[in-house]
Amino acid sequence: SPVAPAADRSVPVRVTTVRAALADLHRLGVHRAVYPRAGQRIPAGPPSYVERPHDVELRRQLAEAERRSVFVALVGDSCTGKTRAAAEAVGRVLGDWLLVQPRTVEELQTCLRDGMVRPRTVLWLNEAQDYLRGEAGEVAAVQLDDLLAEPVTVAVVTGMWTSVWSAFTSTPASGSVVDTDPHANARRLLSHAAPPIRVPASFDDGQLREF
Image (cartoon, rainbow, N blue to C red):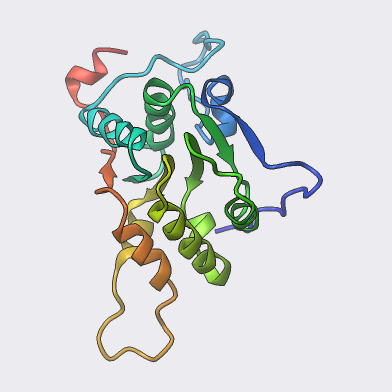
């Protein structure tokens, strides 16, 4: 995949309220809606949200953050609605919390090291692989694991493609070459997370009728 440009270090890490963050879903990583029919009027805001069964479990997991820290991961293929589902649920369950959104793994490490993720904070990591790959990602995984072990109330919210989740959570085959376990710390972190929330690739007929 292409390498993302380096973040402008003169721009501070985004710290805002959840409700303020929801005013700009695109900045949270939600894809803009596509309207394929010629001449169709494009609404000013995002399309109405249609709930699906996974939304119930998502809200349940987020509600646990009121009494203990949680790591919530939505897993599915590209453009299945993972980020939009996370945004809708966070706004509904944790709307009065703060939201911290680091842009790079280096910014994530800084946030965790400098205590920027305080109690009643949503740590928004839209694409988990961007924060967990490589040596820096392994360090960040340990920091996140340590955060989740503390007696605080924090919600780490992220999404991963199904193939990426499998790559990060699979144990290397027995007898493989030494030092070929690039995701050992990330796998340990993900094993401590709540059960992943699977987001299906399509809507059923009943859900489509709600559009």
